[in-house]
Image (cartoon, rainbow, N blue to C red; front, top):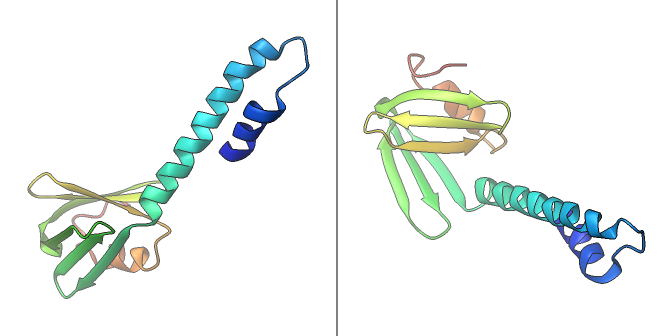
Length: 118
């Protein structure tokens, strides 16, 4: 959508008398759809999440790796609006996981019941 609105904004334009009013709205739509696409790409790609036993390992596409114990998870909250789970650890760090990742529901079911806030 951002590319379509960008194309219209740059190459097509508007011949209507209110084109000066439409232009800021087109820019707002381009930015909104562009930011949404970046957010989806950031949350969906670039992470590998693995767990085995009591160890949770998260690796980013840049090679950074975070290893933590599942027992260190203090709380798990689900955001219906963003479609993600937020894991909060005892040291205060957080990890956001898309609810649409393959295996996330199994991981959340594996977490301690005291941490889950379904």
